[in-house]
Image (cartoon, rainbow, N blue to C red):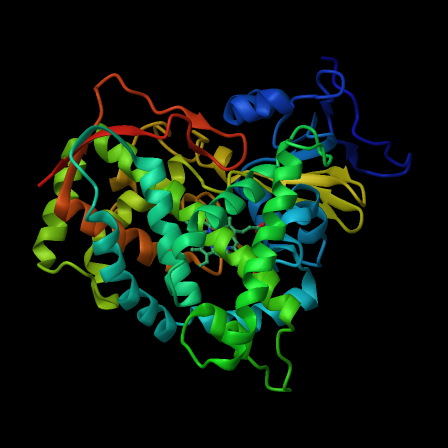
Length: 448
Ligand code: HEM
């Protein structure tokens, strides 16, 4: 396709127009991006450099690539980029008023309250609750030549989230809530973005209704309680000047948080299962480390001792960033690298692609947790080269929670099971929404 300028540039400007092209009529590069975003991004990076535009998902999107772009957009000095106007297009109908979709002062206000649910002492309490649940959750896993990791882990993280976040088990409602979460998450990248019955978009809208009804039903009891779960904390959190979240705020934040916590941890664990199956020497090494702790449920103080799991987790997050790219929209004209990004432009940055850039990562395709060891610290090459949790004002509020949960689960799984895949197996990654194993990741599971 012939490159075209993204916009006109005033004659007296020193800036250039962003190069790029729309791709196929109507769908642009949507299918190619969903199939292999790395390939598309690499081709465009080689052709156009760190900033270009592309037609996809019904939009003309400016793709900003690499650590410098990540830093510029995530730090967002001068409030140039709106999170709301970026994310709203994809997930606003399903996750509206979630904290990630708020901007600037309002976002800061909500984040300050929400932070109370993620401080060190509260996290310690969450971890204590998790241990026995993990034990009970993985106990029924059977020896099997065809154990599907994705489903098992998804169920486990959802069960944990409902306990830690809401203070009880879902019981009979578990299936409908789980389905509602999946439908809302998948709806964001629907090709047909209209309420066509049976379509992905309409299933997402239905899912949102199910979740709203569920949280609203539980809200009065939580307002009345003084429990320590996240739902209660959000109900009672009060700022110095006496402001509290409204009922709507609590419902919106809960729906967003459950989604944010559930899918991202599931993806990270699935990636770890895959690479540890492909690299049994690492699986053995991590198992020995866990055995050396000599306890089933880890405590907060043990997190630092699980150094190998820590490095493997970082490497898994590099190789499969659970949030592969992040959208924003410019709130005024922006200058980047000598290019003009006009006000109102839709832009994306991509942790997924950044993590495979060979300018920053030696052998980027290789699973090599040692690259995060103190002696190598390859992530230090640039402060925004390793960005699975984002950065700046919207940096993941749950990153310590995620670390805790992944370590706590993997530790127990390592103590109880060994798993493997055939030597020639390559896990297909389904990037239709967030990246998940396309085949559910079948492994041979063996109880120790
Ligand atoms: C491995 C697991 C996780 C990954 C990779 C991850 C990734 C991210 C990323 C990239 C963002 C920034 C999005 C943006 O700037 O547009 C984000 C934001 C967020 N994450 Fe996570 N996340 C993970 C786990 C969690 C967990 C466990 C929770 C909750 C317990 C959580 C809650 C949030 C929230 C509330 C935000 C929005 C923060 C804000 O806008 O101020 N995340 N996450």
